[in-house]
Image (cartoon, rainbow, N blue to C red; front, side, top):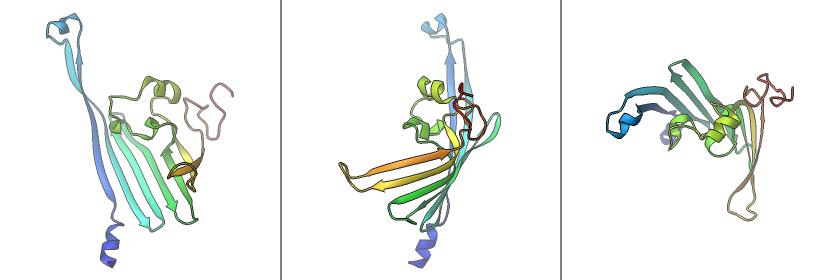
Length: 171
């Protein structure tokens, strides 16, 4: 069993590509003649996840876009050090709704909804910080949790763009 437990520490590595096929047209499209088409490469994502020890897990995601490389997420989560609590530290997609937690290539549609773009900006809400999660005793459901996130507010769309800054428009 000792050899099997070592397998858990091997990293899980995945690669995902996001490529769009675009057809543009006008009135000629109704006659079956598209005006233009093409393929747009958006991102090639690399994701690495590894169990570091029985109490901690590390995750990292970065993408290669036509503009260059971008670190999307890199964080460590500690679970079980304190009963019913977990701690996450690093750069992560904040838990603001369901879709903000997903990367572009994970979406079941071409892009984020317009309300996400208008509210959180093009890249969504990604920040450096800490998350403390309390797994509450079952009150009215089988699983309840309370999560508190403290982040640096580095989103230029929502904040003034400086670490630990005021909401945009209030500075």
